[in-house]
Length: 258
Ligand code: COA
Image 1 (cartoon, rainbow, N blue to C red):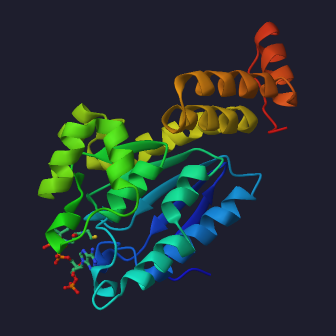
Image 2 (image 1 turned 180 degrees about the horizontal axis):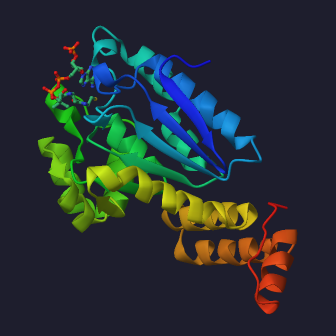
């Protein structure tokens, strides 16, 4: 069905693998389209509660936009590419938790894709950077905004102005990634986390994601108001009744996503 990505379902967790290892999983137009289509499919799939996004091979998560496609492209064409299927906004607005599993180079659009996910788990070999400046351009997939919000202006500015890479430990120190694991443990640790989250109420997960995202989008007061509305909305779900009843009956809840 897809040429440049693999889509695998493992119970309640879906694994999307960007599969152009020879090109370090660089994001060409086709891959962007397929990624957005896969997310559309998983959005509508009630069986899937969490999505893990990774890159094929040991060398890279994603080494950025496909630079071959940049040559000769006009401003109008580039704007159309970014707007047509904005994978960064699609990922950010995706209603289920998205976990980036980062195994190697995580650069440019790859770093921006990881930043658009909700949680980033990296291997010790992961390296992060926004090297666009070396091509005479700047990040265009949210790097100047999401990276700055996550690690602060000073460090984001340094990464974007120099194009230099940082290693996994530095990324962990900055809060750019949530966890760092040895390469051999990366998949198991990431799937453990994904499966743990997949047991929660999908209704509450979607509300939680929307509420947390509001923190970067609005004022504190408006965010606090939105939190109360979303919190109250959870009280309309069967999952809330199940969660509360299960606690009182000292058993594990069985959330249905209703
Ligand atoms: N777009 C298109 N092709 C890319 C690519 C990208 N962003 N990144 C890597 N590739 C390709 C290389 O051209 C090479 O293809 P080839 O074998 O047909 O020549 C292949 O992937 C392997 O990359 P290579 O450069 O040989 O690996 P390396 O280990 O020597 O270097 C990097 C790895 C990541 C340092 C280097 O590939 C690089 O700098 N990539 C570009 C990163 C970038 O600027 N991203 C932001 C784009 S906006």
